[in-house]
Each structure stands twice: as structure tokens, then as C-alpha cells.
Length: 447
Ligand SMILES: NC(=O)C1=CN([C@@H]2O[C@H](COP(=O)(O)OP(=O)(O)OC[C@H]3O[C@@H](n4cnc5c(N)ncnc54)[C@H](O)[C@@H]3O)[C@@H](O)[C@H]2O)C=CC1
Ligand SMILES: O=C(O)CCC(=O)C(=O)O
Image (cartoon, rainbow, N blue to C red; front, side, top):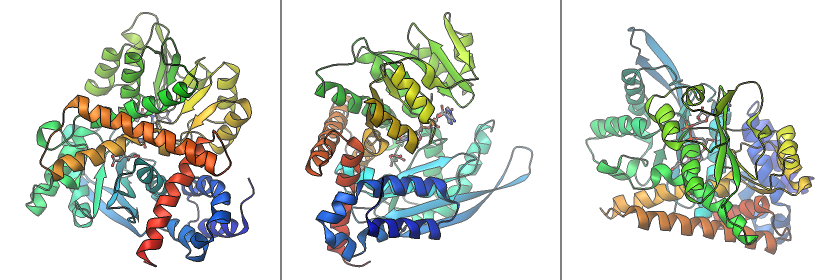
């Protein structure tokens, strides 16, 4: 897509100021591509340099994380927190522990988070953090010492009214526990609202664990509803087998779909009888083992390590693993096999070429900043419960999540209509997410 001249200049500036940060460039470009009609309709955003400002993080923190492994060796990792935009509320977004983490990954995630959080309608700004620490193969003691070392620097930058981290890849309930424990020890404050994704006996919210996966399924369900269809009898492929994927599988099964494949970074399993969720949770949440152990424990299932999960035929595909895991070839294969909906549970799992191919082949595509916003929305519900010293039931919280996902879905479609791109969820999500942040930035002056 050709960018409006002012957007082209902004994009060139982003490339120049952030060399080598390819994932960040990709995330920015995807948003700018949607803003042509916004620039024409609202010159005030260009006049006040709102788009230029939104592409520059408010603050970027990079720090050393020294810790001692089980052999007594000193290990050094790098920690990050990018506090991207606080026009709508305190910075909010997860922490990722994975060896691939560097500034460009954290910035792409933080940038996406600004618009995602805006779409939820909750008072939360955008941020993201993490480390190049690889939790794979580490003992529980090593994970704890790493989390404590990480928080020993991070604690001075976060707070209920400042910046509220949560989980992401490699950071689940166990890690949030260790991080919260260290924050409490250093500050001598039981500040529940400083982190979300906490355990339900110590300040967490019911449904937060399930929220991202459930929310993605609710969003895809809204797309089906516009066609007068439901999940009943649908064949679905879900990539990943972590937090988002597992609870997407759970909700899909509750709604009558058959999930025939899921994966991890070593390969994927195909189970034509439908994924056995109990076995999947045992392999991944209890044993923390490779996905091949699922196939070893289940008659009729098989493990594949030398091709793409997207070659398994399905009606609906939910990429729930990691960025750029679904490319143009995968998109074309999905279309040839009859897939009609792709909804992103992960952040930016589909490449720009794949998204173009979806459009050309009539696949309805829901971008992550809309479809996976249920996780952060439920984090905001956790913050509400913490602030009011309250605890809500599973049913009530799940209904709030479902209502939020319906609201985001409808807002995407209404905005896409308003800006002349009917049915385009990417344009709808980017424009609706952006304009709300932009209006707040205008109101707050040049800061
Ligand atoms: N946890 C949350 O609440 C939210 C997570 N997300 C996004 O969802 C995605 C998954 O995150 P989580 O489930 O929380 O992480 P997780 O650490 O629980 O699981 C990640 C899963 O992805 C798999 N994986 C990683 N690289 C892979 C590859 N190259 N191919 C296939 N599988 C691969 C891992 O084996 C693991 O099963 C990420 O993109 C994350 O940013 C988005 C919104 C909220
Ligand atoms: O719950 C949160 O604050 C973070 C969720 C997140 O990292 C995401 O939406 O990608």
C-alpha cells in the first residue's frame, strides 16, 4: 500500500531512528498502512505530530540481570521495559522471557499494546518488557533467582499508577509469583495492583489465566455470528500449546468445535479425534515437556516436525504461538484447504504477505490487537478488583470478558465502515485503537 506523504516521512524516520529492529518496523508499518483515511479526515493529528509521537516510546529501560545458576556460575542476562504510551492510563503489558528477546521485539510488542489496550475501552496505556533469559531446561530454583534479580531493577520503574506488567511467553503464574514476592520484599508494600496474572489466592482474578485464549475464541465466534454460523462441527487448528493456545482449545471444545492440531517450537501433533485437553495440560503445564510426548501418550495422534501446522486442513485457524509463524505459503495453503477465518491469538503471528493473501482469497482475518485483547482486558478487571478489594465469580468475570470482545468486534466493523473499508478488521482495529489514543494525546498537550 502507498502511504500518504506525511505517513511515508514518519515511516522513514522510524526506520532511521530504530535500525535493525525489523519486527518494530513491521508493526509500525501495519498501523500506518491503515491511517491514510485518518490523516485526510483529521489533519489535527498531523499538525500536532501525534502520529510521529506515538511511534516514539515515552521511555525505554535496559538493564543488567546478574544471577547465579545451580552450578554456582554467575549468569548475565539483559532486561527490558519499554514504557510506550501513557495517554490513556498507566503503562500495561506483559513480560516475555525468551532467548530471541531484544529491543526490537519489545518495541513491536509495546507498540501493538498501545492500540490493543485502547480497543478494550479500559484506562490503560501501552508497555512491554522482558529478557533474553531462556527458561527452557532451568530448575525452579534458577527461575526464582532469575525473577528476583530481574525485579531487583524493575521494581523502581513500576507501580499501580505507573506501569503494571503481566505475563507473556515464558512468564506465567509461577514467574508472576516470584516477581511479586520480590517486589513485596524490596518495597515492603502489598501493592496488589502492581502486577496482573497473580494467583487467585493472593490478589489474582478468576478467568485471567483463560482470558486470552477464551477471548480469541469469542472474537472468532462473533465473526461466525455475522454469517449466521457457530463453532458447532467446525474443524480448527491452533498453533502453540502455551497459555493462549491451551485455553483457546478449551473454549473451542466447549463450543462444539473439534481442534485437530496444536504445536510447540519442536513441531506439531495431529489428532483427528480432537485434542485431549487433559493430556495436553499434563504434558505442557505439569511435565513442561515437548509436544511429541502428547502423541506418545495418545492412540491415533501423530507428531510432525518437518512441515508447517498450517498444512493441516481446517475451517478456522488460530495462530497462538509467536510472531511471523504463518507466512504467505501457509496462508495460500489454508485457503486452498477451505479455511475461511484466521484470528490471531498471538501477537503479529501472520506476516504482511500472509495477510495480503488472506484478503485475496476471501479469508476473514482478525488481527491480534483486536482478537487477543481479552487477556489484557481481564488484567484490567484484575486491577479493578484489587482497587476495590473485591473478588468476582468466574461466571461474572467471563461474561465481562465476552461482552468486551463483542464490543471490540463491533467497534472494528463500525470503524471500518465509517472509514470506507467495510469488513476490514485490520483497518477497523488500527483506526479505532489509534484515534482514541490520539484524541487523549491532543487533550494532554505536547508532552
Ligand atoms: N499470555 C497472554 O495473556 C497473552 C499472550 N499473547 C501472545 O500470545 C502468544 C503466546 O503467548 P503465551 O501463550 O502466553 O506464551 P507461552 O509461553 O505460554 O506459550 C508459547 C507457546 O508458543 C510455542 N512456540 C514458541 N515459538 C514457537 C514456534 N516458532 N513455533 C511453534 N510454537 C512456538 C511454545 O512452545 C509455547 O507452546 C505470544 O505471541 C504472546 O505475545 C497475546 C496476548 C496476551
Ligand atoms: O495482561 C497484560 O497486561 C498483558 C497482556 C499482553 O502482554 C498482551 O496483550 O500481549
